[in-house]
Length: 411
Image (cartoon, rainbow, N blue to C red; front, side, top):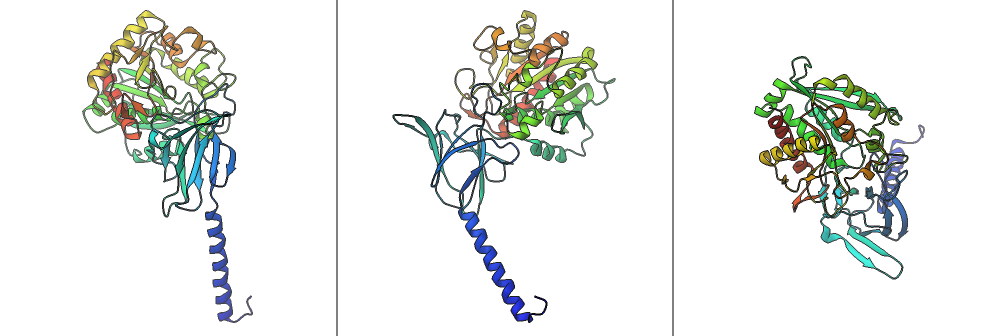
């Protein structure tokens, strides 16, 4: 090559570029679906031309759950059909779609989903294509919230003196579990400690958007933020199942039990054990403990924000009182009504049999912090609250409402 004339070298170089461009075009013309990235979850069952039949990957989940997250790559504007054939995992606002690698999401709407009943099966499908100039789109049951989202938020707040980042522990796959402290960072000066957790079930991403909004309010340069910084210390873990979040697991009903049934004398999961030790270390200072969740895919009690009542009547009094406070302070778009925002013990799924696999965070917190003004959990729907769209912004706004409600309840 070194001995060739410069003109010949130029021609060879240009011809190589031509071949590479052609190879790239062929690759991009091949439509493909996969879930090989952080948070990805899908089984590709069949493919016929540009029609893909997929299903949620249940892995070590006992029974069925609905979380999916896959990407479509290939030629732009080529029609594609995605079909779910085993059960319908698509929520009430259709699938969520991201065109920026999962950073932001929009709902496609339930109108895009078609139900087809045949002799041997029922399927649910939606058509799609990649917009012009876009070579990848992601589709998920709901907007995702991964480590990358948390780190983006932390970067935006890295100069905020009311926020500290540490590690709760290291877990099985070598990841560190982020531990956040916010508000009044001096434990001795604080009037009390507020404990916050989310993602005991890996798929419940919307709960973490609300947690982010709550902490954002506590470190903001406004009246609410100043009250937090003057009086109350938040200790929070956004990802109680960090490995499951990043692996794209369902998390719910994980065998032999999931993270929210692990609050025993001998926890199976390192992050639960570490959180229990931390709770014990500040037992006498805890005034509030809230575990944030998302409910089932749709149906009764899955269309509203609600608190899950405890079995102790004295706890129920505290929980109902806080529900009334939240109703009073709600400013964001997601509505909350105390009369239908509290699921009493013994109603619907909230019974003793639901805890047969093990003790939950809420049950542990009620027993560990009996003097707390509130200890329990909240359920935040993935897609719709009484007709109002749930998205990243509206979930964050609910978190801000929770931040103000906690202040009002404590002060």
